[in-house]
Amino acid sequence: MTIQTPFNLDDLVAFIIRARNHGYAGSAEKIKNPQRPGFKEFRPYAEGDFEYVDSYSGHYFAPGQEVVRSKGIPVWNMAYNGGMLPQFHGNLEFAKQTFDFLKQALARVDHTRPFRGPNCFVLSPFIYIDNSEGDISNFKGTERIYWSLREVFRQDYIGGLIIHK
Image (cartoon, rainbow, N blue to C red; front, side, top):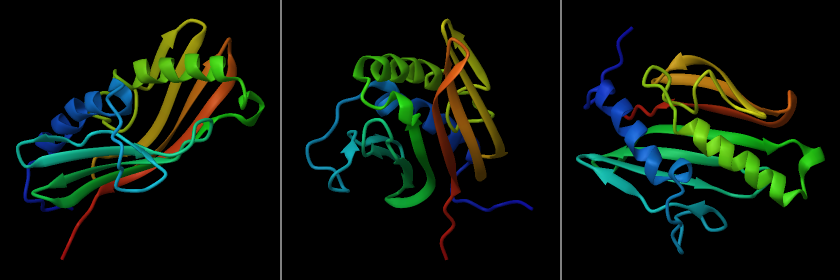
């Protein structure tokens, strides 16, 4: 089954990969008045007809959402939820190290799986593992971070195309 979109899916994938550098993964600037109060939101990134917005709330557990609009209409979304495992809540320095490593993994996203990071990324003592299924139109997955072979971070995500009338 082929999904009809008013844009090329390869163009959407390429845009998402570039846009990530202007959100959490790229340590972009947060805006003062987010669309969703109580969330941390990064300055929207626009290129051509596409616009990308990345936002999340919380710290140790930090649910969030990435949305892509085309000509002002939402066309793609990814939601995620999870974070540091409970036994590591309160350890700000370790969480910072883990999140810095997560950003490095997210910067290595693959165009065939433009959801989170690569299947595997290692920067000892950290290991990032991502298991996903689906494609840009409909996907889900779980990413995990291990420190010295001990799981310290887990996050689930789901997303895909938004199809309007």
